[in-house]
Image (cartoon, rainbow, N blue to C red; front, side):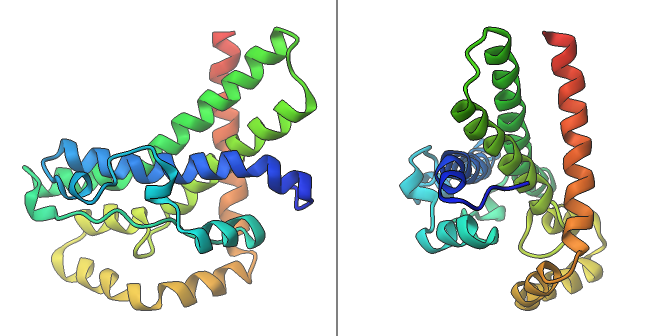
Length: 207
């Protein structure tokens, strides 16, 4: 559960900024690795939050849990292998978020074991875990322009991929509608719990 108090908003800000920056940087880095230097030339191959954060999108995320970052522009024609490039760039953001979530959860476990686990640390790190897991899951929804749709477009035949791409003009309306229903919660919460269970299992073996 998210804390909507002022304390919760302040504690959640680091996790939210990190989730946004890591997600977009991972997209940029993957594109660069695959041969497209567009993110490098547009200043997106950086961990500087100012390069990735859209102020209005950040405020929306803090207040209503629905927002956005500046999208990373890529040119798929520059990829050495178009299909591999599109797939790698699409999954890079969600995978990076899951890695950050796991490291944050591991840090919580280590600090607790060392007796350095204060309420403030717990709140900040737990929000970082949840934000990053939710970012990964949400962005893998198969709705343009989310990352899941880009993975699906690579796998689908050309005609179906084009039809999926054509939904992008309605995406904002569809997302607003979904947020007004229990549908997203029915997807996010079980998957969030599943990811946390797997992470806790792994951490239990490590520590």
